[in-house]
View (spheres, rainbow, N blue to C red):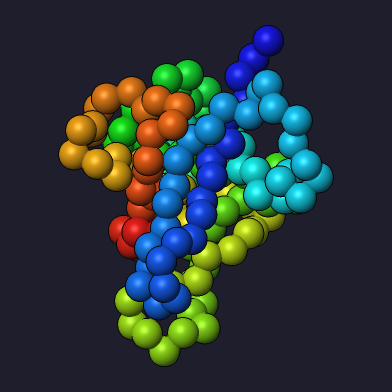
Length: 153
């Protein structure tokens, strides 16, 4: 029986303060209500940032890069991940548009392709008890950073 990990993102605090709580949760043994499925993102691919940069460079040059396509089975802090929305099969992306007048704000949404860096996010620990290069464990609090803009989700 394979485990199914859900990336849970919950807003907390007061509006405008940007407090969010991200964590991984094993949902393989749970009965999920139908509404929960709309919130599930699947980690479709995980790569070291260096492997991602090589893949994007090869893609921009028109080359095919098959060596980095498999990704890692063990998720480490510092890795880049591609998150696919389970219900729509679209990818979580940092959008180029911005609907806010706040210069620090950016739009996040779903898009149907994963080309370029807009759909890639690096995983960082939310606490100082974990550091880059360590294994991400179920239940860990996470920070997602856009590879394209280097902004925190």
